[in-house]
Length: 252
Image (spheres, rainbow, N blue to C red):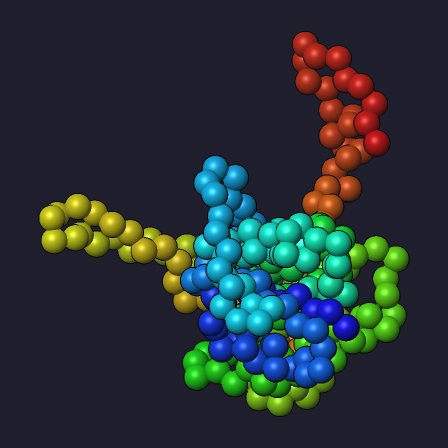
């Protein structure tokens, strides 16, 4: 099968190499940022040119974001010969709960799904030193299972794997993960203030969520994500609300 791989840790990242090694005998393409782009979310470069550098056989570095890399891969490098599946990772750390809103790893997979290819974001929920092989092996088997039972429309999965051999997995919903809302102010040698944001991560206790599944139960989490962010439950209440001075038209 034809597999497209990307990430947000850069084209030379160890997690990406482990993921490529998990597809022996397959036609593996790697199109990834030329440097780390962690927490870049779904940023896309619309106001500057992008450059592609070939760094190996079917292996390319893009001087842009993870979204740029997948966009160029599907609309240029692999135009007319779409991959069977897109995988992004293996990320050097977890992408759980609301991390998915910031993650470049998830954004690369999301771009693949937006462009019509089922995609999987896979992250290793561990501190260094990282052993990516078990997470990569699980992601590869999951990818083959997904292709063996193809969904009606392109699917986006967010996968997080605890350290060590994979003991099992659970299909989960997103949990809640926070970073303490800290802002640390310091001064540079010229007396100007600069700031570090974020602190130590913690998660809410939500049974069967991705956070609890990985951190408390020691299982891999497989979370289906949807591209339509419409808050359906608010359609009716907002549809009944008047905005004085303006005519209200019927919505969905």
